[in-house]
Length: 280
Image (cartoon, rainbow, N blue to C red; front, side, top):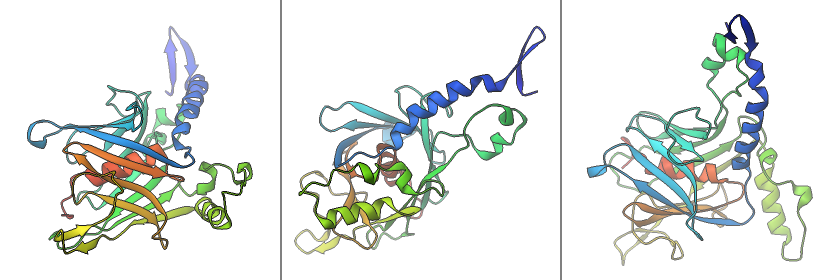
């Protein structure tokens, strides 16, 4: 009936409110972007012949310290992200988000750790003080079954209708030094104002010497792959927000910057590595 009972003593679910609020404070730290670029690596573990489940670990590039973990059980399931190793169940205490794919692998929605609306509407869900799930971003790939052109990726950063600025560092706290010229400040303001931030990948150029499409990755990527890409703010090809590329068979480089967070960048990379039926 929406409460806990023991020998006739009924305790409302609201007693968990403090625990839930403390848990939310800890997890919201993952939605705070860092100033400057963060250099990371992703390690992927698969079964024989690429079988499932797949496991991913996000590590800092400097000390190889693990930060986030993710698990996908099969090619049709959601990817669950955790901030502790060994977890695999949704709504675990260390569950921090999920990547939800469509059947074709052309659209991915990234959510935070909240519970779906249908559970909130359930009789018990109405009593349990769990936050409702919120969308963090969308990742979309153009349909490209034949693979006769490079992949086109579009990312929309959207904090469930809330301004991106609420999840960014405060503009008022910026120490305007001589090194921050007017262009830098304007770019930062543009990234932090508005209800969403749109990004797309840089289209690689054909290299006759390599007989393939190519992009400069400044020594961060070692192997050619259709999964390698760079994200820029839409309309500004010179402002790279994220770089992702292959180092070895199951090791990938991931570099990103404000306003993307570790959770955002990790989720985008997982979407790039996921199985795609309609994208070569």
